[in-house]
Image (cartoon, rainbow, N blue to C red):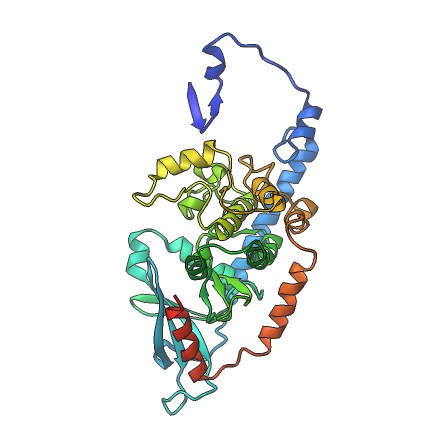
Length: 389
């Protein structure tokens, strides 16, 4: 028996016992599995169109990345470090201000987040392509729901990304503080991420790393809109079958090593919404004494259906949305298609109130007119964020 991946067998399995083989016509197969059908001329042409579109998008993004010019005229030496915002596997992110000509900062100086990446750590873990991916996506993007890249630098030891500053910090900290969100609040934050996905998917980019730590709040308040950050795992559609991402958020096709499409992001969206409302991810049950091994977690993701806690009053609309997003078969998953069967199908789900996406955009317009804060206000915001719990 040849096992290709979980629950899939090739040929020899059928010969181990007596079995009856059933036949299905090509037309019926095409009707049942339109996205997988490659036997017809039309199916082959559609696949070729998708492949060509992916190649064209990648070439365009690579061209834009090479042509990217710094939007801020400064060097790392011109930046004053004010506070440490976070530490990651390859370096750290700091709050910085551009020094004035006199060497001192003024009240109306610009503030940024400086991501410092260690070249030696990246090389040792063979993550060079992830850094290139991040620069490629950021330099080619212009969306209010993605952090903006202002400049890049490098020296003998490090690579630097000068990024838009989001004072609210990670959404993860808000979930940790509140334990879990109301469905209304979770709906609002999910809408922000959906609009980010809409922008990326329209450009044939799969994000592949959604989690609360990668969602940044623009303002220090519970109704500030959000932006996606950290694009190291982002990939052009039809290009990848690699195992990457946060293990609690891995889709079945990622675990199985299958080709990945937009459905990967919508699986992550289902986990994300569930975690916001319930306080933990659906397949990583809260265990006070120990954490499940990766193999145990993967078995749950591949073999168990999503269940909901009985101690929370959850709407039927919420349960329906999460169930549709967490379909094991990526071709059956809500949002995995293109056009009306893609992001629009998610936005049209009854869990999202009719006005929610308009509300997000109106809030965006309101906040964009009041983001010029003085230095003292920045320090106050940082204090509130790091010590609010």
